[in-house]
Amino acid sequence: MSRVLILREAAEAERTAVTLAGLGHQPLILPLERTVDLDPGRGGAFEADDLAGFAATSARAVPALGKRFAGDGRPLLAVGAATALAGEAAGFGNVHVAGGAASSMGELALSAGIKAGETLLYAAGRRRTGTLEASLAKVGIRCVIEEVYDIVPVSLSEGVVRSVFAGGPPDFVLLLSAGQAEGYGRLTDEMPQLFRPSPRLLALSVRVRDALPQSLREGAAISTKSSLASLFELID
Image (cartoon, rainbow, N blue to C red; front, side, top):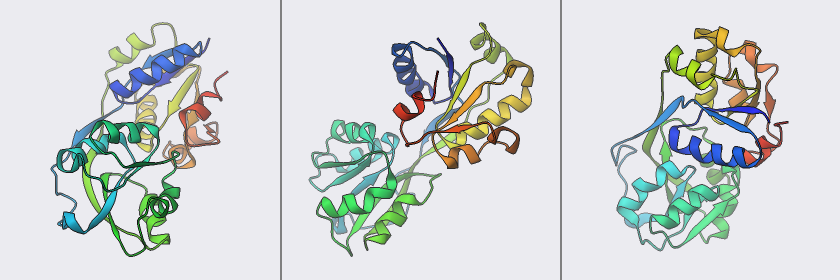
């Protein structure tokens, strides 16, 4: 049984912990980030009637869309099953799913009936990669970006970390976002004595790995696919 550290915000961490426990591992939870909702409309003015559909890369973005567009029959393009389920729960009946990769959203939009020259509303986080926008632009589809949430860091005291590590440091650390990688780097810099021997770092992507301090990058393993299931396969 491996001890696996989860750094996601609390609700998501609990769901991940259940999966890890089912695989025979011991989950440890230290949330290093939390979601903050942003005011609607911060992304700029647009005419709702001119939109061909909607896009979201995270379930965190869906509530803001649901408040204004629940029951709308236009396509909602979602990255990943969790985002798609959130869209359906929010009242969207025409949900199309990209299998965890924003880079495929352009082709997904075309298959959903959205045409080149039309415009999507992309409900986004303040921190994003630009992958979705580039994928849509490649097939000639425009997008209006509206920032509806932000991910902010959480500071933890040494006492809190010690209590979670009561049985010793983790064997593995899951790094699912650049923010988590940066937060883990700060944590190990502030209290290095709690991370000896050094756990093995498992990053969801190259981008996440590269958000680690240089001293931690070399030994980090990178998932073969951008999915938790693929990352779990690296735990032994």
